[in-house]
Length: 394
Image 1 (cartoon, helix red, strand yellow):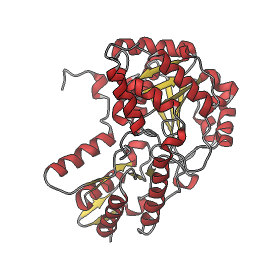
Image 2 (tube, one colour):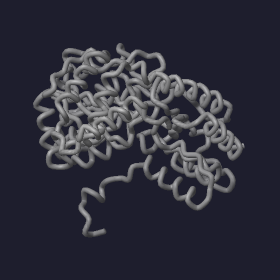
Image 3 (cartoon, helix red, strand yellow):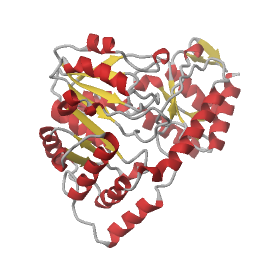
C-alpha cells in the first residue's frame, strides 16, 4: 500500500461499479439479486447498427484508427450536432474517445491545474469528482434537493464562483435524478457564466435522446458560451451500446487538439469496428430508437406509481434518463430488522442484504438523502424489486 501513488490512494472506487460487484458476489453465492444499480439499457443493440459492424469486419477495418477518430465518423458527429442540437462544429473540433468517460477525463487533464476549482451542481455523476481529483483540482459541490427538482439556481451558481473556478460540469438529462434543465433555466445560468469569461463549461448530454417531453437544449447554443463549452456525448445509453465504448466531444479547436494529444499518450484511437457502427447509429433517423425511449417512459410511470406507495419515499417526476432518485431520509435514525439506518449508504446496503435489491447510495452523487434506482430493467423485475423493498420496510 505504501508503494502506491498518492494519486491512486486519493481516488475513490466508483460507487455504481462497487455496488454491482457486491450484487454479483451475492448472486454467485446463490442469492437471487435484482440489479437496479447499473445505468445500462437492457435492450440489445439495434440490428441495423450490428449489421454496420459486421460489414466493417468484412471490409477489413482492423488497423489502428486515427487517435481522434475516423474523418467520416467526425463528419457524422458534426451532422448529428447540427441536426439535433443546432450546433455547428467542424471535424477539427471533434475528438472520438473510448466512451464519454474518457472524453471527460481528457478534458479535465488538459484544462485543470492543481488548485483549480470545479463546480459540481449536485446531484452529479459519480466520476466527475473523482476525475477532478485525478487532475489535482478541487470539487466544489453546489447542493440541490428534491424540493427544487434537483436543480441549482443562478444565485447559487454566482455564490459558488471564486477566482479559482476553472470549470463547471453540467449533466442534463441528469444521472442520477433524471432532471432536465429547460432552455430558460440554462439561459439564466448562462447569464451568470457570461460575466466570468475564464470559466469553462462541460455539458454532458449522454442521455439527450432519453427524454420524455422537455425539449433538449445544449448550453453551447448560447452564442456567448459556445467557445467555452465542451459538449460531451456518446452512443452508450440511447443506442444500447454501452460495451462498444464510443464517446465524443465538440469543442473549440485548441481544446480538441489538446484532448487528441492527451489521448495519443493514453489509449490512442477508439475501437475501429465500433467507430464504423457509430457512423450508422448517428446518421440514421433518431426515430429508429424511439421504441426504447417509449419503453423507458412506461417503466418510469410504473416504478413511480409503485414507489409512491411506500411510506417515507419522496419522489420527483424525472423528465429524462432511466433513474429515479427518491429521498429516503425518513428512515435515517431508525432500526429496521435489527439494522440501524444512519444514511443513504446504510439504506442501500440494507436493501441489498435484506431485500436482495441492488441500488446506489446518493452519497456517491453528492446527495446524502437519496438513493439511485435504475429502471433499465424488465417490468417483471421492477415489480418484484419494489415488492421486496415494500416487504422489508413494512
